[in-house]
Length: 66
Image (cartoon, rainbow, N blue to C red; front, side, top):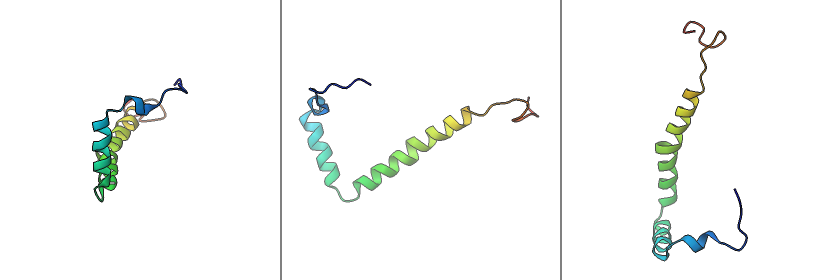
């Protein structure tokens, strides 16, 4: 991915988005809830899907199906 030394990611953030994020992060336990949410509802299903799609059927793996 190219990098642009004179350009900050903050240049693309709306001030209200930044304010909303700061408000949410000030809530006790928000980081834990957000981390758990991402792990269980996004990352794990994605990981299971990727692992399930990597199973190969051949003479050495699942030969009865092959």
